[in-house]
Image (cartoon, rainbow, N blue to C red):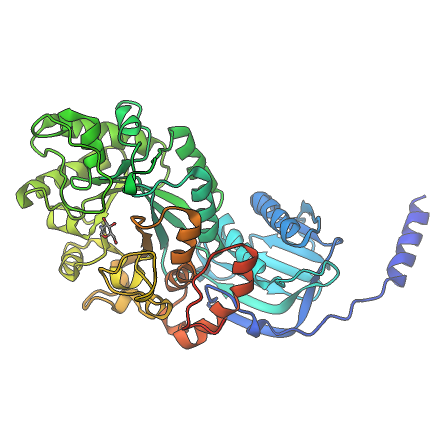
Length: 507
Ligand code: TNX
């Protein structure tokens, strides 16, 4: 019977016509972020129900991700098999073998031939990034008999290790599902950090078991007086896991000593006068402060950092530290120094807004530049690395122009070109790439109440920040980027994203 099977197999293969591959030009594909290197070979790979993903053991989970994504986009069920060492003549191969040191963990090589597509990386995160590229290479309108991907070779790796976005869930609360949606947006553009601004004057958003009123009282409110909300620790863990599955690290922020009205309203003993203020639902900043002299303040912070650090696997803990106008300068220094020690005690590296450099911060701590160039320069003098979030360029809550309804304008209007056209390593005099950990685009949500509004401010600026973080400056220009961005129109619409149709882009 083996003979018969063999014979009929041969006959079948003999009868099967070899596909004539459609000529396609990989160089014309519109990828964001733009890859480091790309060589087109003028032909195409065909994805069909006969395609099989062959994977090295280490990349099994990514093989499943790829199969699931392909199923969702194309409707085609693709099998997964073990990658034995002999070479394959057909299929998609996930391979650990790379010859390029530049790839590090997040980089990948994609070799697309007519019958075989090989994805290689040193690490699962690189394979995940390659999958994001493949998704962008798939046609936007799917005819399941003709799913072709342009052939050629892509070599790709990030310029900065930290490529983030921040979501302020304090001014307005966003549900676990909303946050997951946001994580999907980041993953699509190879971003790897989501910084969650979990506390502010208007709301405390994370359950702390040793201080339950933070969530019960502090979690109730939000800007405008509407109902707030908070994440239970189980919710938070779910977000952390969802992000981790997409190689995104959650960085928790508890903003202090200012921006603390919600905590102060929950526990009178945290106030210097022992009395709780009223909950706050306006939009002012700079009026609240923890009581720097009280011992209970540090007991409280120790508990909060301990509980939150225990459910945050990333290495960073963000302590805020911005706009502490209601804290005396000398007190601010004492406070930040102490909190820095608490953060280290719980095994995390401290991150703070750029003002924290006015305290005695360790060179291993990180400063997030948003407004003060002097603070950025002080950071460099102290050998402290920077996350670049200049408000004039990288604030997702700035209006696009004078007629934008949502957003604020204190840092100026940030049109799509303004948001894209800058170089983090040339933005502040004397600050070069060696001083920079990466970039982050914060979305403050005083004016943002739901996902539809969020999308309008985030798109189409977010892909630009992703590209600034990923692609070397020498490979980027607004004139070329804007045509790639325009081609995302169909994807945005398919994803039901309420994006801003900027007149700077020829949609
Ligand atoms: C300044 S940027 C703040 C936030 C506001 C934001 C609004 C920073 C570190 N602090 O408290 O939400 O402006 O754009």
